[in-house]
Length: 489
Image 1 (tube, rainbow, N blue to C red):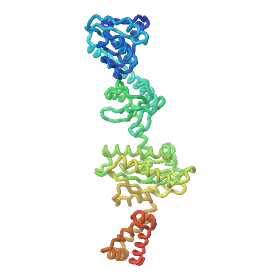
Image 2 (image 1 turned 90 degrees about the horizontal axis):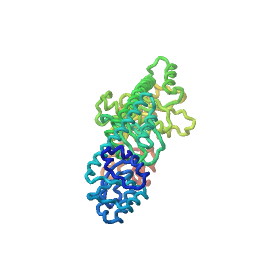
Image 3 (image 1 turned 30 degrees about the vertical axis):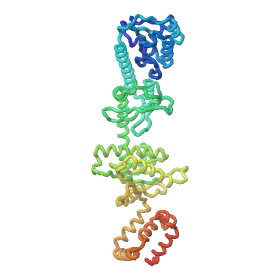
Image 4 (image 1 turned 60 degrees about the vertical axis):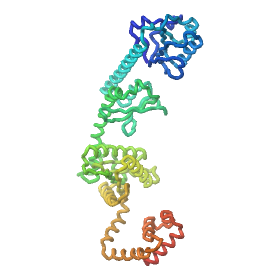
């Protein structure tokens, strides 16, 4: 908001007649706050906003004191800062109207008819824009100074909070809060922090949008530019730390080190505890149109997004993890040693399901595969856990499912099946057995092959099989007896 004198030049001020007997109002002439300007006639209704300067000819009111009173009342009730009137003839406002305006503390001024409303509106809007730019420039200068002083995101949020006169949060692209100032509320709006079409994050302003302070170009130029320095600095620091951690976890998984003691010491410096029990998950994201170029910009950006997603999910579930990526292939070591967790396997499953859900929502067209090792007993053998997770992951790739996971314990079954299916004698026996079912199904309504497959998949659980096949349990039992009778098994 700005004062009247900040908007009007001396020539215009000299031509204004202050219609009041209240000398105090005359002294307040220069402190009237203005946020906008408009031309209004009766009825005023809700067309005027708070601290708006209202221009009017008071048409239809000059010979009707009741209507004039209504105009004065409506302008005051709307929250307007002042009323400027202009009359074609040498009309004089009645004393009763002037006294009433004084009584309700509404400043009323009379302009010469020669001064056009359009000129006043244009002049005031120019000054409003100039004053807005000035406040943007001051905020930008403060942000640059804070950055050069190595201040935090929280300090930047405080500076921006004074600009908006509202509490502020600075968020990353994923919604993670980088810094905040002031008490949050449920009433807020978000502004993009971007520069040259690159999105860094968001400004969350806890108030109703102010059209004078939400100009996208001004936000980008005067606030987005200095804030981008904070984001770039953080990104550079994170990239160095991420690479160090990435190399460490990759070397740990592949046993690329000379001294395990040195690895323990290096892990401590990076915030890792190797003297614990761990589980390893090997996660692979396969794009629908895979370019096989893990070093492409698209692949790099996607890997960074997934890395941040995994870290957020681990924090949400209270897990300490060690993470490395090789393109869109991720190694996740999950620390399982926590006395407060009574159901560690269930909690790990929930954690991995959370990652799976978010990945499937964010990358709809991509396939998600992950292999899970066993939980180490005692201190972890990281190389062996990684090998077992990779082995489990390997068995996922033959699946046509969009999301598929295999645990290391499952691989033992797969390995047995893999060996047996290449044995000619076993293959012949299996074929003869299944053919008995196929022969019986000709002309029959019972799909015995499908029933057998579902029965085995359900762990020979008759209730679950009946549910999955939408059969009455007695019907299922009849089919199973039929299968036993035909196969002799």
